Length: 357
Image 1 (cartoon, rainbow, N blue to C red):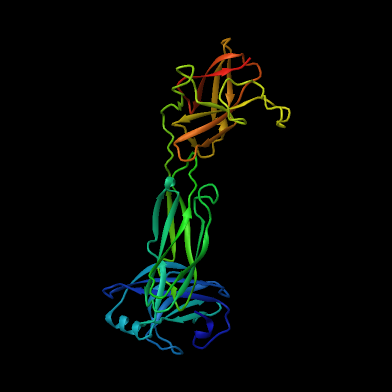
Image 2: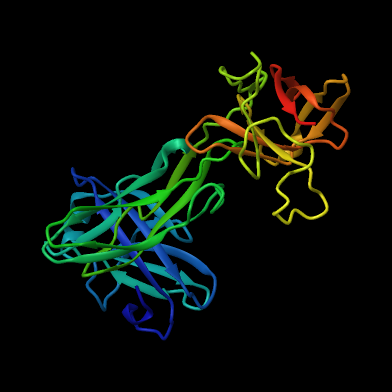
C-alpha cells in the first residue's frame, strides 16, 4: 500500500500491507491491515470496488481505524468474483488526504503465498523448558520464501520468565511449515500465568503476511503458594534421625560446621561466618517477595534460639525444591542444633545440624 497507488497518486511516504483470506466456502473473509507513516491522523479505512488500478470504486466494507488483525467481513458471490479478478482495493484515509493517503489492490491467483502462525494463541507450562511455535505457508509453495520472527514482552519479562528470541525462517520450495523455539525460565515465584508476544515481519520471496501474524504465547505458572507448611529435607542415613540435608555453601561439605569459615585461603572479607545450604519442599515465594520472607530458626545446644533471615532462596533446577542459604550467627554454641524454616506464617518440620567447637 502506497500513495503512488492512489487515484490520483500523491507524495505520501506512508506504507502498509493488507491481506484478505477467504473462508473455504467463500462466504466470509478475514482482513488484516498494518500501516505506518501517515502524514496526519487516520480518518477512515475501507475496502472499495469494483475498480481496477487507477480507477475508483464504491465503499463496500468499512474497516476499523488503526492496525488490526482478523476483521470478519461477509462477501457476496459478486464480491468474491471481483476479489479474484483483482477488482477490490483497500484505502486508508487521513486528514491531509481525505480521499485516501495510501491504497493497495488485492491480488490473488495461483502464485499467491501467505505466511502466518498456525494459531493466534498457544499455551505452555512453565516447566516445559521451551515452547515450539509453528508458522505455516498457504497457497503456492513453488518458490522459496522467508519471514522474520521475534518475541517481545507481554506480561512476561525477558530473562526472568523467558529468553528473547528472533530470527528468520527459510521455507524451501514445497515446504508448508517451519518452527522456532522460545526458551522458558522456570522460577520460584508464584506469579500467575504470563504472556509473550510473537510477531512475524518482512516476508520475502513473493509471500505476504497472512493472518494471524501476531500471536500470544501464555506461560502457565506451575508455582502456587499453599497454606501447607514447608518441608525441610532430611537425610535418612545421617547421624541423627532428624539430620537435615545441609552443606557449607562455599566448600559444599557436610556438617559439623564451624561458625566461622575454615577456608582461610578464601578472601571472604570481614564477615567470615559460614553460610549453610538446606533444601525445602513446598516453598514458593509470592511475586515481589525476597529471601527475607523466609526465616530459619536455630536452637543451639544451650537452648539459645536465633531467628536468622535467609540470604538467598532459589529453585533447585529439575527438582521441586527450594535451596535456602543462611548465615550461622556469631554466638551459636557447639553441638547439636535444631532448626526449622518459617515462611508465610507456616513452620516446617524440625531438623538438626551439628556445630563444631
